[in-house]
Image (cartoon, rainbow, N blue to C red; front, side, top):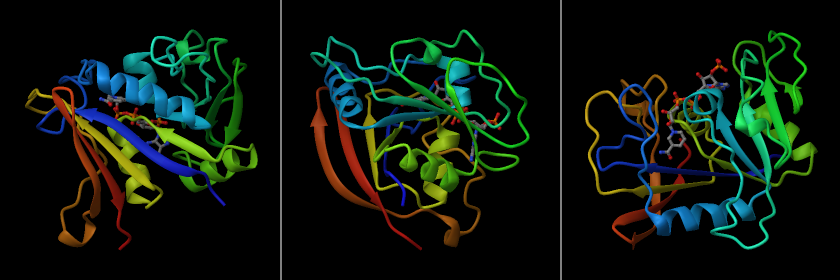
Amino acid sequence: MRPRVIVNAAMSVDGKIALRGGKRIKISNEEDFERVHRLRNEVDAILVGINTVLMDNPKLTVKEKYVKNPRNPVRVVLDSKLKIPANARVLNNMARTIIITTDNAPQRNLPAEIIRCGQEKVDLKCALEELWKRGIKSVLVEGGGTIIHAFLKERLVDELWVFIGPLIIGGGAPTLAEGEGAADERDVIRLKLLEHRPLGDGLLLKYGVLND
Ligand SMILES: NC(=O)c1ccc[n+]([C@@H]2O[C@H](COP(=O)([O-])OP(=O)(O)OC[C@H]3O[C@@H](n4cnc5c(N)ncnc54)[C@H](OP(=O)(O)O)[C@@H]3O)[C@@H](O)[C@H]2O)c1
């Protein structure tokens, strides 16, 4: 058994989720921030890859501005080499944090529960099973592109929400789905459009993922 996996990201019209070099840029508008914080408040866990922690240093909590009396879900970081800085904001005491790493990673004392899954990279199926064992029934994957692609490639995504903001970033900036990329038509990940609606000055899309 595994939790329900919802992916959420904000991208530019050209599919970029950050500036070239990975620096954060605000893509969501106020309406989208409110939607995301409500969604965070409804799930049992919010999950990101280690690069998002290193680049953006997010708190991954629910802002009172958007949700009254928020119940902060568990924060989960996938960090194969356990290189998370001890002062990362995701390790603050505002919510519980779980770091999922590998058997090869060093031992470290951090203010978080550490789970080991896999050898080189975090084994995603094992990670989801471990979260399920801890009572986590839904996970919101918030990025970045490498982690989103990894979940999509393994067909572990139930819903994909994409907010498209009215901007173009261009060039080789990080995209919604990184990874190796499909060189053969058989390797593309096919989606089914489930919902579409304008949201302020942007557009919100909801997809399901089709199996092979
Ligand atoms: N616009 C948005 O909605 C949004 C949201 C979040 C982030 N971002 C942007 O996304 C960028 C970061 O994205 P990113 O693609 O560089 O990194 P990422 O997806 O945040 O993290 C990727 C890292 O996760 C680790 N990892 C652990 N297990 C893995 C597995 N099974 N498969 C793949 N990776 C695994 C790997 O590092 P190790 O091998 O060291 O573990 C990998 O390099 C930043 O620029 C940030 O601003 C945008």
